[in-house]
Amino acid sequence: MATPVLDKVEAESAASPYITVTFRIRRFNPEVSAEAAWQDFTLEIDPKERVLDGLHKIKWDVDGTLTFRRSCAHGICGSDAMRINGKNRLACKTLIKDINPEKPITVEPIKGLTVLKDLVVDMEPFFQAYRDVMPFLITKDTNEPTRERFQTAEDRERFDDTTKCILCAACTSSCPVFWNDGQYFGPAAIVNAHRFIFDSRDEAGEQRLEILNDKDGVWRCRTTFNCTDACPRGIEVTKAIQEVKRALITRRF
Amino acid sequence: MATTETTAAGIGPVEGGSVYDVDNPAPLIEAPRQRTKKTPRSTRGNFEMGAWLFMRLSGVVLVVLVLGHLLIQLVLDGGVSKIGFAFVAGRWASPFWQVWDLLMLWLAMLHGTNGLRTVINDYAERANTRLWLKGLLYTAAVFTILLGTLVIFTFDPNIR
Ligand code: HEM
Ligand code: SF4
Ligand code: FES
Image (cartoon, rainbow over all chains, first blue to last red; front, side, top):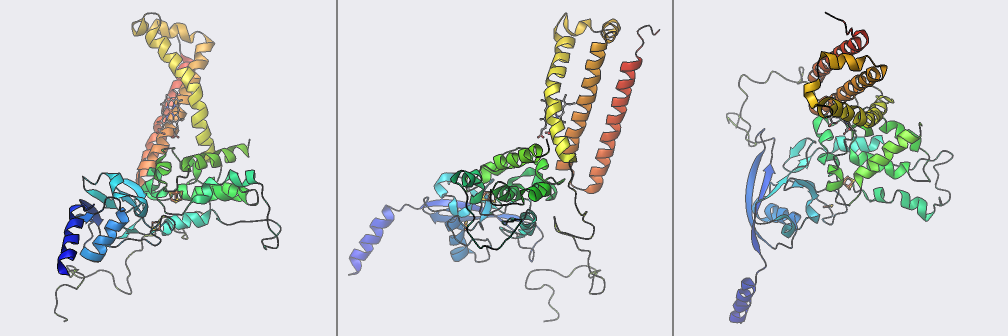
């Protein structure tokens, strides 16, 4: 009985898809040291797995103190945006094979927000900016959902792109203007304002435009396109920001 | 247990003890975007929009003014070697070139100043640094614009 099992194990290991990958992770624990430091972990992992699977392997089998956020693990909840090989991505949507596993894979927290521990940052300033643009339907006469609010397919299409946002903060934390003092509203807040400004059913577009006409509103955007590159949902973030700028200008002139 | 030097978390005792206690708490550092009493109610207004539009509109005009200027001064008709007192005097005798240079002076200075204001906003982190850099910037801009305007209007070709 024992022999065939052994044979099978050997045959499997000969055709192992596993490769050796180094994860270079930015560790920070304020209870131990005020300094953040890089730590290397070497793993055997299938290159078709994702960076998140690598982090799980480390947390579950090697070092339980590694701290990061994740929830859905399928690119929907937006909790695991991190800076992987210098670019903001979702760990759960990044395959090892797609980011050159020959070199160490660097994993850092997203920039511009206070790091609490390891890869976990304080998202409060990000969500404050989000709340500031009133990301909910506002109607003049009644907010009671007494009847369906009809909308043509074209009207729905107008803001379709910006409905896809999962509030992962990859865009806002990739923006050099946000990095400086964190006062800029940031691309994500503007994307979510765009979602309602261009919704034919909503009637508070004017108010939202006024909010984004702030000193730290849309005019701080320098069109670097970092946000568009970073968005894991493929939203044309920079385009949305320019559309808000244009709406602000055309409603005046 | 009271004699242990370090806590489990690895924090050693602070030399000289903490200057802060319950009655004298450490100063609170507000998080970005936090609403406090000192936060201005609203910084909305059309100034930033105006500045943004001005950068683009003045840029378009500057393409003509600056490139034309460089072409005339440095390329055409013998290049840079032709420039002298007589050349400048000859050009400023015409109101056309006076207006051209005046417009270029004002637009380039305001455009450049506003551009640097953006750069300062993007790179200076402390409020004080910003204040000083902008103070220096605005002083230099006002000085250059006034001096340039004065020269264009009071230029005397017969000066000895
Ligand atoms: C020749 C035609 C010019 C065009 C079309 C032009 C256009 C522009 C535009 C559109 C911006 C805004 C960029 C942004 O908001 O991200 C800008 C920025 C700037 N411009 Fe000009 N400009 C011109 C000439 C000049 C001149 C002559 C000066 C110097 C006096 C100047 C100095 C600046 C500076 C310092 C900035 C800020 C830098 C930055 O935003 O990265 N420009 N320019
Ligand atoms: S716009 Fe894209 S990158 Fe920005 S928060 Fe939304 S999903 Fe994330
Ligand atoms: S874990 Fe939910 S988006 Fe990655």
